[in-house]
Image 1 (tube, rainbow, N blue to C red):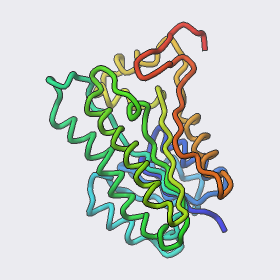
Image 2: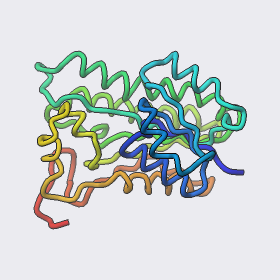
Image 3: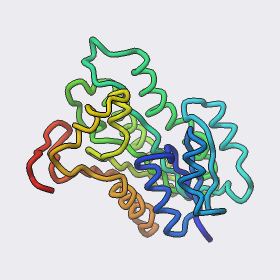
Image 4: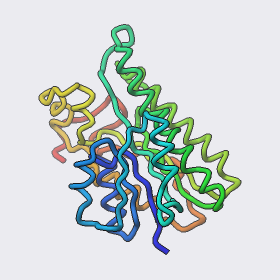
Length: 251
């Protein structure tokens, strides 16, 4: 029986790459995002193997409505990939924007919980399933000016561990994938459209690509039933930790 996966934040970056690699490997995928045209364009080639859902993970009523009214042949979700997330601004705590803080907490933490709340009961009933929470190295350590973003990703780390404990009795796997520097649109959002500043983050070394993380997620969800990759941090070779990057390695 073909497994069904649900991927949030599937319109770009890690979410897009993950949904595509799962589809190419025989999964049916529910792709979730805010931009309907992106979901249509990026997944048109996969036909009936894709179900697009348009919602913002911050909207708990919309999340509950969309995920609570799935067609019968899409309800048995085996794999949930909580990927939707963002970073807004890079200011010291005393200069931080309340709107930025709200956005990071609402998407990275509350949005993850809203989607999980809608999907987990079915996994509990079936006594099977696999949840992948896409975190960050920012959930393992705090770096200058990372304050609230790091706090939101530390929360994801804690939720991941709590999920694994609570859902263990039902045979549900729970995994965290924590990337370092990945070249996506992430920095453009963080620097609020400043393309030059965003591009400078990735100059002088080879960052991870979205496809690198997608391959790791595919590996994680295709392990035998007795194997759970519970917590994995992956960095580009040039990156030693959240704030140390050697920019002259040549790869």
